[in-house]
Length: 257
Length: 380
Ligand SMILES: Cc1cc2nc3c(=O)[nH]c(=O)nc-3n(C[C@H](O)[C@H](O)[C@H](O)COP(=O)(O)OP(=O)(O)OC[C@H]3O[C@@H](n4cnc5c(N)ncnc54)[C@H](O)[C@@H]3O)c2cc1C
Ligand SMILES: Cc1cc2nc3c(=O)[nH]c(=O)nc-3n(C[C@H](O)[C@H](O)[C@H](O)COP(=O)(O)OP(=O)(O)OC[C@H]3O[C@@H](n4cnc5c(N)ncnc54)[C@H](O)[C@@H]3O)c2cc1C
Image (cartoon, rainbow over all chains, first blue to last red; front, side, top):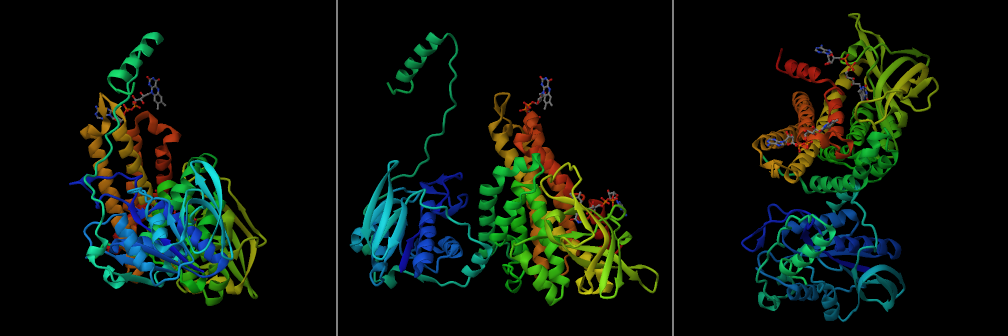
């Protein structure tokens, strides 16, 4: 089976993030594999172990993303592709990403493509479904379980806390939700082996794309941090007075009533 | 000159950091309180290849280097000193001597299972009357036919109760000048006559297994002598040089954890109407801690690098062990101070850091012995 994983290198939202001139400060931020993509890598490896085939992990980014690709290889993926846009693209959006991936998959036979449900940095959740549309593949989002039998896939997906069961056929694109699996830690032998696994680097030129073809359709106007949490207020006095004060504060200060 | 870690080193550090945070950290308080050796955690670490980092693949290892190994020890030490000590001892004291001095057969039989993480091993050097002065070893080994018969006693041996084999040192004869010849012998667990108990109540590293070993007419095949029979003493000096790097790395982990906790707390804790991190008295403590942690880490990585390059690292590993262990003690003490009364309470963990750190100034050569090693290297 030809298994592909779409992987994004993102900053860790659990860590402190600094913004300077409307850009995330690279220096301070900690970079990781987008956690939902980690589920995708784990599931891809499990599918390969059960059904045979190869797992290819694809990312669009710059040289720094090699670290995350190597980590996926260390977990057990067979090969990786870095589509390096550093020299060609200043900006990109979901359209850019999908356009590049569409070109990438143009001459590849994918039986299944696994992506994350969202990338935790921009959280659009668009890349998976939009790519499936362009490739004319079935698409199931936010999956929490998948079993494949021949050309049929039985899937459970998370629907706002409820479970929906779906039967569909390959080729297929799925986006992975928390609960699908427990991603493994890359083992030491895995890390050492990853060194020798193929990591192909492409530029958009290699995919017969021009800069104009992938120009973003949207523009980021501003990036800013949420306002700092204000210190709480403890009300004092008789219970009745406290309730009155609370209501009035909710009206006048918080303006939620 | 390049201070950058390789991708493999970075990845290993990140993996161990994640593993330590997810699997070990939630158990650290209980491991200490109940003095419970986390055998299951070692099984997991074994599966991840952590017990075989610095050994080649042909012996079941991961083919990593000393730098990678030191990074792994640091990350584990950062969450749990007990697990960190048993880990460092298993690799540096248990497995390393067999790798460096063992015959091909010994490596196949005794090293491979260790490197694969299927078991732990110990190194028994210290005796009730021979600590810093290891030359004063009283345990004896006598060749009888094709067996050595060993009699004696070993104290404070890390992991011995859980070890599949223990390398013990013993006097095996006399040199022409009348001084003792000390050799090392691999004793498989369950060898009749070897009694292992853990009667100690420790101040720190309480979850690390520390055992007493009594050897009464313990018979091991002649082939179990480790390395050159004449050079046992030199061999364990070399083993201890390597072990120092890992103890130093463990110390850096505890010092880093102390800094992390103290910094976080200082920013949150308000007294006199502001975070205590606004007070210069607290800032200076944190500045000193941060500086010392980084200096200690640099020395650890440098001595590990020297070892990986096949260069002499005796002096540097003594620097690293001495400075890092004293840094860990100072940093954990300051972390308690910055926490005030809370720091004195177990649930804030910094008091455990101090108790754990203290061992690092004693084990694998006390601070005094490190200074002696350095002075000797200076030509005194
Ligand atoms: C938790 C724990 C785990 C251990 N694990 C192991 C293990 O796995 N294997 C093993 O073999 N041992 C192990 N040890 C033993 C440890 O290595 C010794 O405790 C250490 O080497 C010190 O020896 P000692 O305790 O006999 O102290 P002593 O040698 O009696 O030292 C007492 C004091 O005298 C000082 N001193 C001694 N000689 C001199 C000198 N010439 N000049 C100046 N000062 C001197 C020392 O620095 C120290 O301050 C462990 C100990 C502990 C506590
Ligand atoms: C075992 C025990 C018994 C105790 N018994 C009693 C008792 O019987 N009665 C009682 O009332 N209390 C008692 N205490 C509380 C004890 O007095 C306090 O812990 C102590 O006064 C410190 O206060 P704190 O813990 O709130 O630390 P904090 O005041 O929060 O101090 C935290 C750190 O900030 C530093 N700091 C604070 N302000 C400044 C500043 N302006 N400039 C520079 N540094 C600053 C402190 O020196 C400390 O290092 C006890 C505590 C313990 C642990």
